[in-house]
Image 1 (tube, rainbow, N blue to C red):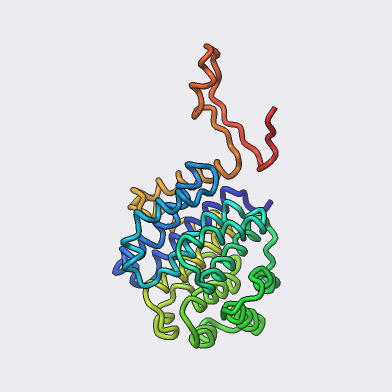
Image 2 (spheres, one colour):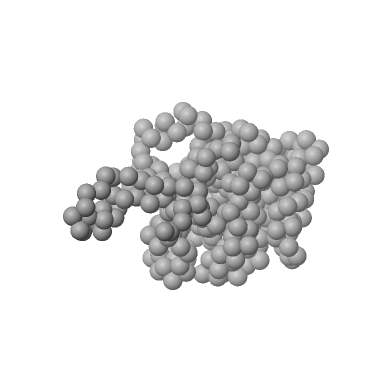
Length: 314
């Protein structure tokens, strides 16, 4: 295994956070940026607390944030980012991944472009986590996963594939992708930035958040942040937390400022670790010590964990 699951889970969240925070205008659009990540955090907390996907709980959580969703211009982008924890939690089974993503999408709106964008990003994350991501076949596989669709996303992704094969630079890709609606552009640009700099998280994110994107793509600061977030998530899950520049991570820890509605960046890391623990089936005796000592038995604190479906009940 090239990277451990916890490294890839951390890489996804930290990469997404950095991808958005490095975009131009992230401070000016601080509330919108907070809303982008807050949706993902709420979903993660729900999966941790219940250990499963519960739409009623998701709806209750999202209703608390309905004011921000109502006034935002880029609701579609928020929805895609909000589904990142679902992509991570169900990454091992493409069928369940698709089913649960479609279930979650019903909470918001039935938009084919949002659906395809969500499925495309989630499938790439799934392939990276299962170490099946081949940069030469990722886009054709993703298009096959989407199936027949009236949206322009498959066409945009094929354009990216052709440009990558031709060795096209960033400016040419920006010009080619600036001809249709914004959400498809965001998804396509994120795939280009990720695949063109596969082993270099830093360069992938810097490409995605390049100032020139605003002029060439006629993008809003929020959509540019979304491109950075999606690129950061894709590159982060592929390269793991170890692939993210150490000085960037240290800076985040030193500042330890609020992150996506959480009180600090350290809290985000703890949340990710808890998320991995729930996904993996890790059992922490310390959390259930009262049950084990009711009959006066003394039990040493011990954490037992294994890959999914390895631990069996006796």
